[in-house]
Each structure stands twice: as structure tokens, then as C-alpha cells.
Image (cartoon, rainbow, N blue to C red; front, side, top):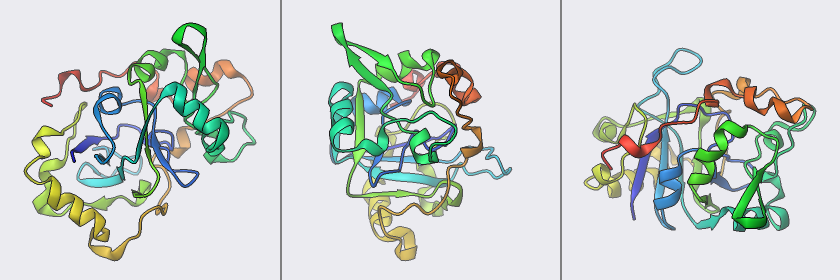
Length: 232
């Protein structure tokens, strides 16, 4: 078991997507999506400057244990047949959970993908597809959003305030961190419950114009420099 930790620059309900009873990570963070395996944990910590001014860099926004790893084509089929809550509906009248649906890539001829209208536009596609896989937590995940849970002092070392992620550097404390998570964060909290709203929910501005995807979430427009510069 490995423990991946990283700082969420944007938490708008799409990455991770905690809706439909399954927490998924299918866009952004391509290195984590390529290398994480079933049984691994992915923990997203908050940004240094949250929308309300708080420093959440030592607070957990979500934690998920990977129960399934699917290719984009497999994930598309899974959503079409069994997990339709993840299919994006980028219309202004759709429920928020559907607007941020993360099944954004439809396989087409030649191993390529067609991008559905949603929270990511064309300039995000290369970064997303580079991750190759969708990570699913069907049984054990916690989502806190704007109610992020503070880390105990002894676990501050897993925090990562910059781009990239930690995994090898978490080896010395991973078991203790996971035990704390599974113990309910010291609060008897239960998994598969949404304890808060996405920190950046206000960034989602759907329209009936598919070309508007490039401006739906402005901080996401520029392709992210992902974990290439990370130590691990």
C-alpha cells in the first residue's frame, strides 16, 4: 500500500468527484493516475489560500482508497452502463453534481478520445489523457471540501504545498496516517459521506454553449505542470 498526498489547487467537485456514491479521480494529476494501484490511498490537502482566506495546506479535503483502476475506455463504458451519475451535463439547469461529471472523454476510432462538454476544455485534454486511467474509490472515501479536517501535528510531514505529490516520502508514516483515517479522523467520522461542499464550487458556470468550457473554471485553463518536478 502506498500513500499519495498532494495539494488541491482547485476543488470544484470534478477532481476529485465525490458524487454518485463513488469518489473518482479521472482528470488532472496524471502521474498519480498512471502509477497508483488498487489498495493505494490518495489524499488531497487544501490550498494555501482558500477562497475564504484560510490556509488549508495542513487540512485534508478528501481521502480515497483505490478500489478499481480503469482505462479511459473502460471508465467510459462503466459510466455509460453502471455509473451514469458521472456523465457530465453541462447545461445551466442541470444539478451541480451532474454539471461536474468527470466522464469527459469518449473513445473514438484510432485510440483517440472526443471531449464531452464539461468542466475541462480542449486546453486541458492533453494533461487529462496523459494520465491514462480513472481511479475509483467505491467503498472507502471521505470528502470534506470546505469542511476540511486538520492534520494532527505528527502528520504535518505529509503536507505538500506546491505542485507535485509525495509518495516515497510518506513511507515512514503511511500506516499511522491510514490508521488515523480509518479510525474516523479522531471524530468517529464514517466513509462515503459528503461532509462539505467543494471549496471552489462558485467557479462552475455552465452554459448551453459547448465552446464555453475553456472559461468554465479559469484557474484550470493553463495546462498544469504536474508531478514531473516532484521528488517522488
